[in-house]
Length: 395
Ligand code: PLP
Image (cartoon, rainbow, N blue to C red):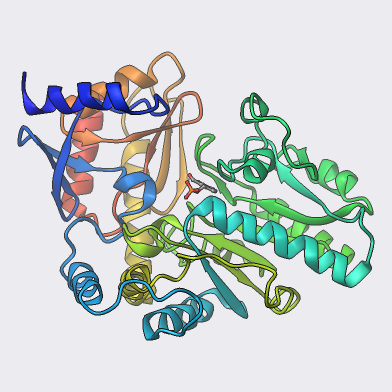
């Protein structure tokens, strides 16, 4: 039996069957390229589900992680470290918000914004009923008990009862439904500006601006989940910059550590000082190793020239895919280097397998959308190469 087969069989014996893994054992990567154990080369249009924003084996990232590993990896939040404070300062500056808290993952960052929004409401209004959070149908906010319930998709609300109460759902882009739902029990609206997991669906700009205005008028906190869209993915550091809004709370994760697990949430003026000693905490959040990585990411991705190039490459990639002459492709949508190609539920598995056979690793979103989240450092030549393969497979 080959090493690849042995690893796949060993996994199926010892691991819970929670993931539909592709039948590849990845071994190493270089830039936007990945190699499996059998030395097959792939162009990575997945980046570990939107994580490896600087690609694989990025020299500055590797150096910073290696140096930090040999210096101090974990100090706990009982102490200050320079990498932690540097990363926090940079993230606050890039966000235009006031204060930051570092978590470990996206779901945990969302737990933090949920807690902060509820405490803001309780502190301000003292009404135990004013704790509901409106989220959107087809959203995705994570896999913890609270964030599963925050996720506006019925399929996530099965099997794990009881969920935490306090969420209600409205359709995206339906302003009347949103306004209707904003009664005196509501403390916050939580939404992704491009719904990622459910099919790469950007919200309408006018809708988002109008929701912001309603939130301001009713003192309902506007929370933007930038876990997938943040850290340069859409061509600005956060996608809300392109919508011209200023949220009260923002969660982010994925790209933030460039491959090292970390997350964060940020608060603007209203909610910056809501969490006080004892209200929230984590052992690993802001871990020095993760922060050393985050500092490199924030320096590189936070550079306006880098972000402008992401935007340019995203536009070029999307236009080239839209120009493929194909009855098979039903829609192409997205923002920056977050692109969805709708092919329908019948075709998706076969399309992804064919792309993989031709050396392209892509992802699924929703029932029938090919999702592309390449490393942000992808080159123009690699975009051309990907489009040529897509022409063969999807035309
Ligand atoms: N929110 C959004 C928009 C996401 O895309 C994800 C993950 O895909 C999450 C939250 C959950 O993040 P994590 O898997 O790091 O817990």
